[in-house]
Length: 228
Image (cartoon, rainbow, N blue to C red; front, side, top):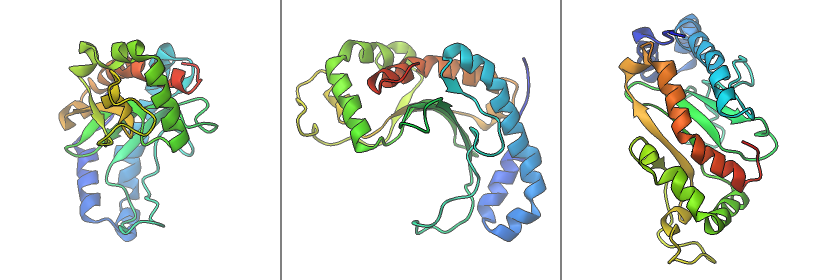
């Protein structure tokens, strides 16, 4: 399958939205949003469903307009100082079938001018989830090393998020995975260019990215008693 989903018009829309982040501008340009961003993104998600199912039958690329993989463009500003109403990027989460029951790792992609990326994992897990992952790392270090310390991972991905300066209470600072145990998030990814996002290489690039990061997602699923 060879498809082009996004174009220069997609990135022009997002740049203009960043410069005019208000409801009146968005409503005047909503047809552009649908044509150059939302509809092609939903088609991309639909076209990722089959290859994702080959990676794991428990993950979903859901192209529904509401409640699917594509995040809403509207921002939740209720508890934020920044009250601008719209995101200036478009993200999609290809989630576990049980993600509404438990906090689960996911595959992720984002389109933003100069900052496109794809990857996976679990971002800022809740304390109980974080503890389960850390405990699993202590008990299963070899599988983690195979998943994230091999060349296939380290040559392509960078971990996101902050780490504690010291090992968390109850964990041995001399443990072989002490650096990973200190992480506050277990998510990683890689950037790609706007030009790639606008080419017919985007879908195969995303599939290759998800394949490379799948061992980490699989490990995190095991840590949380989720099937992969």
